[in-house]
Length: 137
Length: 159
Image (cartoon, rainbow over all chains, first blue to last red):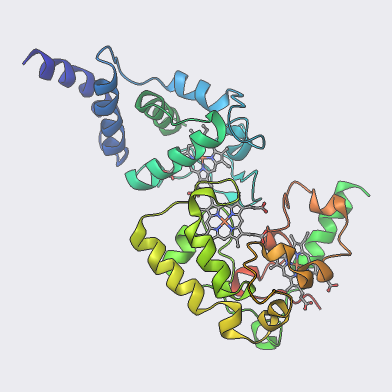
């Protein structure tokens, strides 16, 4: 009972924040996972998401030290794939409302992009932070 | 050469795309299959299957987990469907137009994975300077649409 209550407390602010948007499902999916991974999980942070986005990790592919290598410094701008040269639509939700609405697509892309930049999977906490940041952009 | 003139040249290349009505020997049948367009068009344009023989596509579909250093793996049912489309439209199957020229250079049992290493590709692109290849809008030889505006429709003829 106590655990259910804790989960509800954690999910409530997240759900309220994204209420009325299709990003709801994606964020609550990551909230459940983050809570499972760490019982001290206390919600997502746009600021941490921004740090993830801007940090020069340089732990994966040499051509892509950072998320900004393909998505540019400004998430509202179109980007360009640093490996193939192909243009990429903006990743900020304000510029591209379809972003983060299709969980399969989001998961597939996190899988590829985190490996390219961080050389590992992103954690559910990192994914939720990133989506929270982009939803506010 | 300055970057500006390079870009200008790129624009010129792009502008020299013939109208569909002029489609001749150089037309390459474009990809129309929505699954191939989505899954093989996510990171780069969906390359026309006529540029490689069927055995090349078979090998590529077997090795998606290490696709030019990328993990491009897909669920088995999608791999199967994409493989079927690519091999049915491969260069050694269609055997006409630009595909015929490309296939002449492929060894009988060769399974090349790059279109950009075919001697016909190299011959047609040998005048392009290193600077142009390294232009931030080009990035790599395989970025056909950066120079060929009609690439998605299979038009590469610039004269």
